[in-house]
Length: 90
Image (cartoon, rainbow, N blue to C red):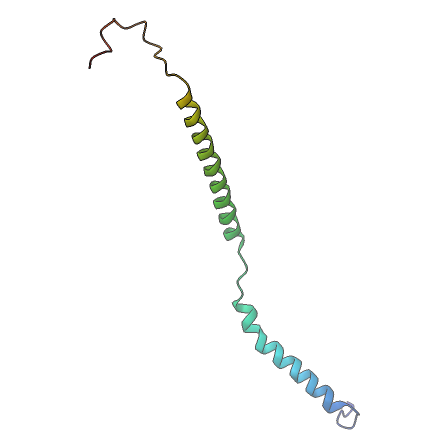
């Protein structure tokens, strides 16, 4: 084995390696705390977004139908089947 103490730059290289190792150890907890979304969480988020989009479309359609219904005159399809006084006066 070759002795490393007599080589030029040995101390600087040793400091560099130790510093890089310590930075790696110190930053590991920070990366461990960052939470990536898991596949099930991604699916839940997508389902919620789809449900919100469907609800928005449903409400829009209901509002449109309600406005159209107000403008149309309502008709009674059974009006000619009833006796003349049956549906009135109650």
